[in-house]
Image (tube, rainbow, N blue to C red; front, side, top):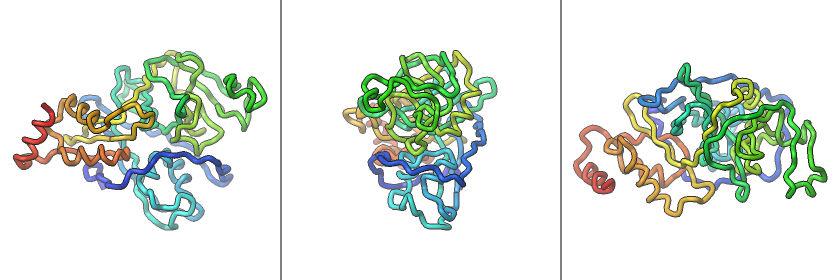
Length: 320
């Protein structure tokens, strides 16, 4: 299967995250190989390919997601909403959505897109990018949007507990250890007390789980931490709709409005399309289906050459 034909039509489901966390299985190895995808912001802004994977004995879908650097609750659940996440069918082959449209970036360094709950690490010198799933701030503790800098890095961090939570934990600071929600490493950025760090609750990655910080799988923060230098720029954006291109085809991702900041999603999407420089090459039916589903899957929305006159007239009028 190629990304050109990767159009998966499934029902969108509500996002949620698990309230009780299962312990990690001791026999699982979640070591991470660094995947560096080539990119070009003018001609190639879609990275990766869908991955077929066979469900093994004792696998849960959460195991499968984590092993392949995805989050279950905002990626695999959308793709397989009727499959039991705890006891999926053994031997079944599932297609993992390991393909992404790159977010818009000015600096090509660190970029976090909140609606898709994903971090991108661009290395401009060799035009490669890495990407990792993240957990972000819960409602009322929303992760801030803006451009910041990494100004501090610490291994084995102490957690300075917010005043509102000190009574709950019975302490003002929590030392490093298995109970510390910051995990093994933290990279602080210039937005107050926020940081990019690991977690002691890996299954929370892909959910609204923090008090504004960015959480990564333990194996991902181990991979990312030594690469990021003090002074690296961090762009945190809120872009539920992304457009990209590869091999002459136009693709898009549409994600839910997780912080409920968009009063009319359809009108918002149409305005995004109006601003897109290649809007005249977009198949309007495919575009509208993608924004209806809002499932985050990369969709080919390329209008076929010499498409029927009605479609061309319709999109021209809607973009005026």
